[in-house]
Structure formats: C-alpha cells, structure tokens
Length: 131
Image 1 (spheres, one colour):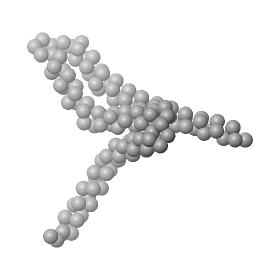
Image 2 (cartoon, rainbow, N blue to C red; image 1 turned 180 degrees about the horizontal axis):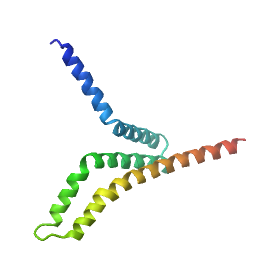
Image 3 (cartoon, one colour; image 1 turned 60 degrees about the vertical axis):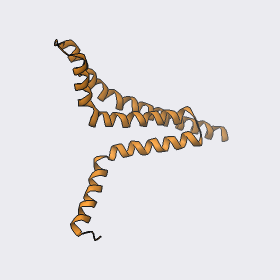
Image 4 (cartoon, rainbow, N blue to C red; image 1 turned 135 degrees about the horizontal axis):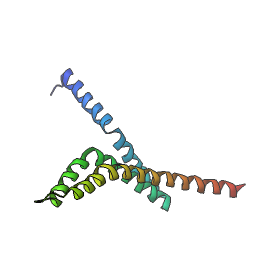
C-alpha cells in the first residue's frame, strides 16, 4: 500500500492538531507519570500530594472541556422533572458552571505547589545537616 503525499500531510496534521489540542492534558498526564514514579521510588506524602494534584488538574481540565455542560443538563433533568425549581437550577448552575471549574484547578495547583515546597524544604534541611 502506497501512502500518497496528501494522506501523509493529513496524517501529520492530525497528529499535530491532536497534540496541540491536548497539550495541557498531556502535561498533566506526564505529571501523573512522574508522580507515580516518585511514589514507587520513594513513597512519601510529598509524592502522593503531587500525584493527587496532577490527577485533580487533569480531571479539572477534562471537566471544563467535556463534562461540564452534560453534567449540568443531566443534573437539572434529574432534579427538575415536572415543576420548575428556580432555586435548585440556580444552585446547580453555580456549582457546575462556577464553583467546580474554579475549585478543581485551584485545589490541584495548591497540592502540586505544596508538594514542591515540601520537596524543596526537605532538600534544604538535608543540605544544612551536611554542612
């Protein structure tokens, strides 16, 4: 089977756009892989915080990109069946459209930065004890 030049170009474009479209998710996934490696190599709270942080960041990214709208609609359809409940609709909208999209990345970065700080602090203490 011969691959024509236009098919080669289309394959390259597909790979390029897939990577650029998911670059942030790939970065978070790489962070998860590194954190798993650290957890297996030297288990500690720091490595678990790093792992949880990157997992939450990846979930938050995917939530904002793919889950948000369908979860909101599904929740509204499940809770509001016959009679309209504006207060319930408002609460669901606040939680799904405002709170979760803000809280997930915030919590994820707090965990990642806390882990980095703990690694930095433990290395600093080790270097002080050597001198």
